[in-house]
Amino acid sequence: MTNLSKIYIVGLGPGDPQALTLRGLKTLRRVKHVYVRTGRHPGLKILDRHRINYKTLDRFYEKSGSFEQTYRKIAFFIVNAAHINKEVVYAVPGSPMFAEKTVELILKKARAAGIQCKVLPSPSFVDAVAAEIAPLSGEELIVLDALEQDKLQDYPDRHILVIQAYNRQAASRVKLALSGLYPDNHPVTAIRGAGLPSGKRIVTVPLYKMDRLPFIDHLTTFYLPPVFAHGPAALLHVMDRLRGEDGCPWDREQDHKTLRPYLLEEAYEVLGAIDSSSMDDLCEELGDLLLQVVFHSQIARENGNFTFYDVVNGITEKLLRRHPHVFDSPVVKTADEVISTWQIIKKGEKKKKANTMFTLENYLPALLRAQKLQRQASSVGFDWPDAKGAWDKLAEELKELKDAYKQQVQARIEEELGDLLFSIVNVARFLQVDAEQALARSTAKFYQRLCYVEERAVEEGGGMAGQTLSKLDEWWEEAKNKG
Image 1 (tube, rainbow, N blue to C red):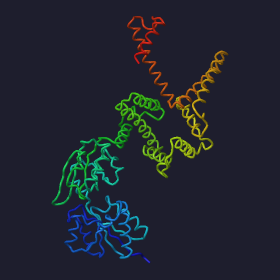
Image 2 (cartoon, rainbow, N blue to C red):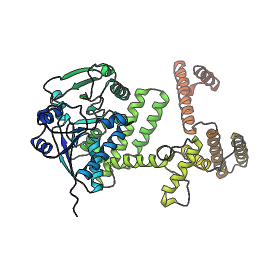
Image 3 (cartoon, rainbow, N blue to C red):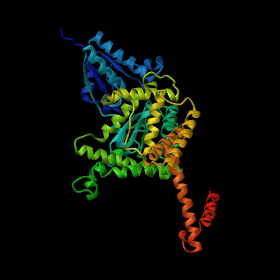
Image 4 (cartoon, helix red, strand yellow):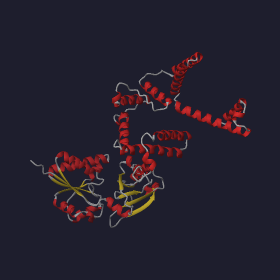
């Protein structure tokens, strides 16, 4: 037997009663059981004018503890009403398929229940708002929900509309969510009653004043222009153009291997910017490093291997997978427990290396390689109980190197020197010092002092080669005293 239950989902338009379509009005007049999500909408005047009986669902807002709970209850009510009455109309402000969570839930529940749904769209509030703030140079408006604050910073390079900031308190929460990315003086346009013949208000204020407007209500939408001229998509388009047929000859010639030295260079320049404590330099160098990621992703896309979005998707899934204590079953863990869990999960991911959870990345510099392997061993308990064991091992390796030197066996000298360096890395780990960075800083310090000695020698005449060792030592001490 065919289930005859049916839900007509009708859009009332952005506010002006005349925005309701003729088909929507005809359906509202014909169907006996009509429900509207909220009675706080000017478009309902057309229903009153045609003496259409309807029931508002505002009571669900009053009795629920959250909007999410409200939407679920409304969806359940409408689907249940369709079961009982066989045919119902559910009317919503704006257009049904645009920023209407209840409609999304109803469609899902109705499909599972075997109930047929018919959507009758109308002009949305976005059409009305866009008409008020036009022109936008053809740019697409991104609609964001004030109740989903974690998404408010997702599109700083786009034109955005913020809906459901229905009072000054809600607007204040939006302001705080945006303030981490948008400057305080960024222009915000409040549009109240877009599309209405009367009662319309359009005011532009700085971001920090957006919650001080006295007329904010359920008919208010906020518009923000982009804060950045370019976003990730623009970067991808630029790289695609550079690699295109009429692009840059140098960029077009590159492949993964030719770019290898630049990737390493940019990574080290990021480290240099961190050491300099210059945030401007760090921002610039991170951009250069990101370019390398985009460059390699573009080459891979051209070869049919993967895309930039595969890279982003892969690392996002990995972070979710490797942090079950955050995203799955939140349990507070110590840093050591987190590292141990990370290694166990990582081992499960490495199917081709299932026989070991350790890795030896030969492409890394030797000090970094040693640090990483030692951390892996420590994560499974193979480590000294405290720093004393590492210090004792360092002393032992130093003695063995001296013995090898006395014997003048070159192969053994090299081996023992390597063991000593490995022990030094171990001590550095217990001291919570990055051995690679420590050596880099010491090398830079030596360079600065050496340049000072050279400068003094040139001042004296003859350069360094023409000076006595004691004189060079004297200048070296001067360089040390200067810091």
